[in-house]
Length: 98
Image 1 (spheres, rainbow, N blue to C red):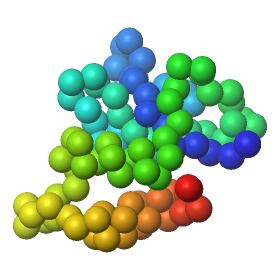
Image 2 (image 1 turned 90 degrees about the vertical axis):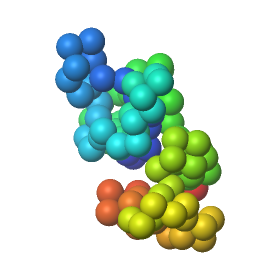
Image 3 (image 1 turned 135 degrees about the vertical axis):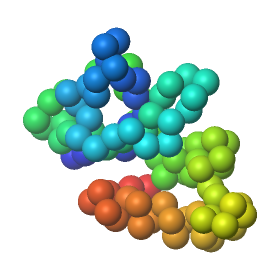
């Protein structure tokens, strides 16, 4: 398998888990969960407790947590948010995420 878009928690000592390649995005301050990209699952298995996200789940999370704001503070339209998500995924080599 390849890299996954994941929702995870930091280790007990505050460090990033070894299965996270690029993380710390879209924190949920009520649960302390953050979004990131896992290492390739061929390199390291992901714990079963790690939640893999789809594009739709990422969009819902961003809207729910208020991470769908333009620089001027206005809320992105659905099309703007989709474009933003695509660019974010493309920058992490995950543009084909469904």
